[in-house]
Image 1 (cartoon, one colour):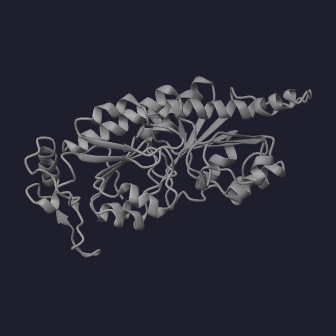
Image 2 (image 1 turned 90 degrees about the vertical axis):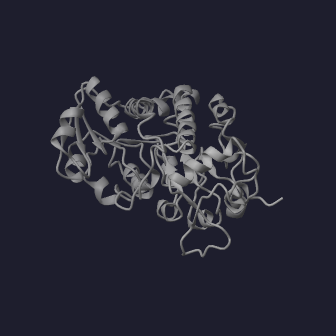
Length: 372
């Protein structure tokens, strides 16, 4: 059977195709030139209809488990077939084979990336939604060129993530992880703890998570300052923070620095050796943004030299982070495996948000679309 064939009178698919056509979305056929214009959807043409009588929705690599088994997926039953792979693709080719013939991808894990090669190899793909705020795992430029809609989850789990980051803050400040490990080894090793109340919290990036960090910081009696690329007096008043003029100024003044920026060319390597050098010797760095925002080698070096009091990391340059690295030998570092939103409530919010994004897309009302 031709993988593009379906019953042109399908009650399930016809309305979906009609809406996609009205949205001006496109797909590529083998006859289209790679760099040329794509073909618009036409639900009356065999060449522009999908396999079977429903849309095919793929979860390409749900490892560790995020959305598999979620009751949220039940809401997609009337829209199409949902295919879930519990393991990560073994290779790019494996990933492409899994996604072949699929129109929608629910990317539940950031370790599955969608670069130019993969996107161009999938002419049927029309939409990718993430179970995350970040979309750095997707080549947005190529997706836009091919007419592939990319949706994310802005702010949906900001309170959950902020809770986690404060958990890291307290664990580092009170030396809890290190001293627990010492007691388990029957060693009574005591370290001087750090105070939190009355200290200065510097927030880099004042989006939804940064805003939640500011709220919790104020509740703890901290002086909250912030730096962002586009500060406004209105935003400062809304968050109850004081914007500083430069990143260097924030780093110099803060006792705790918490990073919450998207990964872009402007933020990659934002915190390196030079930036770490201007921080206080008793300061703590928290990274809840993306791993490449911080030069991990430089951070390990600063910690080993006693130029920082500690660090709390939930993200890493390459994930899963299982390699031997000097950062793992620093007793004043607390690390979690990109798990800031992994509470029952947080996971359900992300899964529900991903399904919401798929449903409204198929109904012709796309939301949370990410621009290049």
